[in-house]
Amino acid sequence: MIQRLEPAMSVVMVSLDSYERIRRTMTALKTQTAKSRLEIVIVAPSRAVLNPDEADLREFLCYQVVEVGPIRSTGGAIAAGFQRARAPVVGYAEEHSYPFPTWAEALLLAHEKPWAAVGAAIVNANPGTMISWANLFTDFGPSVHPAIAGVISHLAWHHGSYKRELLSGYDAEQLQRFLETEGFLHQALQERGYELYFEPAAKSNHVNVSTLGSLIRCEFVGGRLFGAARVRHNQWSMARRLLYIFGSPLIPVLRLRRTLQEVRRAGQFDKLFPRILPGIVTALVAHCFGEIAGYALGAGDAAWQRVPCELNRCEFLRASERNGASG
Image (cartoon, rainbow, N blue to C red; front, side, top):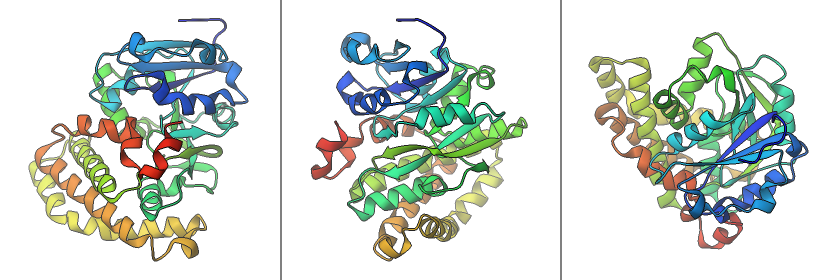
C-alpha cells in the first residue's frame, strides 16, 4: 500500500481479473474534484492478475490492493474492500458506472451531516434500447436523475456511501450479506435510529443490461437473492413464507405502477411510453419468479450467478455497446 496522508473517502472497486476491466471507471475517478482526498481500494483475485496501473493510482492520495482469490460473491468482494478501507467515509464504484467529476465531493459534503448513508443519482449511460431504460427504472427508479435531495427510506444498491464507523460492528459474514442485498443494510441502519440521504449532486453514468435474455437472467437472480435475504433478515416463519409465495403474483402489478410513476417523475414518460412497457413487465415478472424461488428454496448459488451480472457487464450488452462499456 502506498500511503501519504489520511484520506477523506475510500472508494472500493472490484475487478474479476485485470486492471483493464475497471479502467474506464478509474478514468472517471481520476477526474474527481476531490481525488487528492481519495483512497482507492481495489479488490481482485490477486495483485499479479490485476497488474495495476501504478501511474493511474499515484494520482490519488493513496491506494491498496486487496487479494481475495476467485470471486464467488459480489457482496463478499465489496465487504473485503470495505473492511480494509481507512477513510471515515467509504463508498463503492462499479466497473460499469462512471462517476461525474463532482461525485465524491458531493458525497463528502453530504457526509458532514449525520446521515449514515448517502446515495447518488443515476444517469443512463447506454440509452439506445428500451431494455436499458427498463432495467434502469426497474432497479433504480427513485434514484434516476433528475431527482430531489432529501432524507429517504431506500437508496439505490451499490450506489451508496457510508460512515465507516457505523459498519464496524458487523462481522465479515454479516457485512457480506448486507452488501449483497444492500437494502437490508439500509433497513438495519434505520432500525438503529440512523437516516439515509439522497444527494442528486452526486451523479454517475450507469451502464444497464440491454438484451432481453440478460434482463431476465439478472432480474431473476437479483430477485432470488432478495427473497432469501428477506426471509433471513426478518426471520420469517414458514407460514409467512407461504403467504408471500402465493401472494407474489400481485407484486409485479404493484411495482409496475410505482415504476411508471418514476418514469414520469424523471421526465421520460412521453419519450419512452409505451415502448418501455414490455421491458418493465418482463423485468418485474422475472424478479417476481426469483423472489418466489428465494422464499421457497433460499439463495442457492444465486450470489455466484450474480457475479457476472455485476462485475462483467459487457457480457450483458448488445454487441454494438460492448466496446464503449469496456473502455
